Image (cartoon, rainbow, N blue to C red; front, side, top):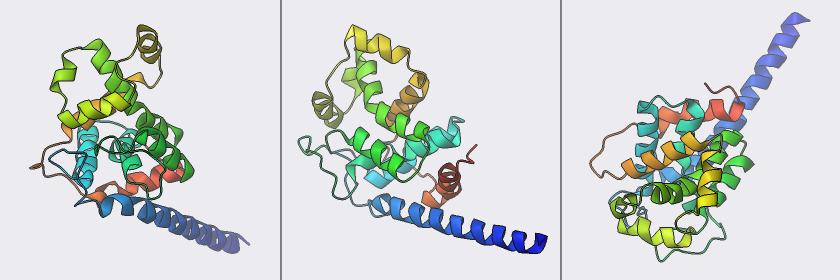
Length: 205
């Protein structure tokens, strides 16, 4: 009886792993094929931007859910069939919500979705908190800012500061800004496969 249960357990594990691997491959096809897709007027592709953001997150000692959030923070620009308006050639409007909703749909932890959805809020907050920051962002980022409700109000900023994910959202924003180096050499998608599968399975570090 124990032997039968063990065999059934192994079969169940293999089936689960196969499902997760399929979801991983399906999801990453949006980015794996994005080498030639411009990152909203920046000097890097969507693929380079994603991998660089994840690299900065990992190098900073972030947990696996946060690293995956950094990797996927802009996936909302790429989801096929997403009903999103264009921001003057600088990406999809509400891409942060589109991306977060998709990540929830495929079963990633809520933390990943929350951080992805919050990286635009963090941009608005940084402009509120550090007025000079606006002058440091790229022309493309300034264009998208107009479509992202602009600078936060005092009330919005105060509420954002109380957010339990405040630090994580701010970090995603910082790594986002750092991930625009056309000469950077960083790990590829295979480096993050284990993290992604663990996040799907709920066993992430």
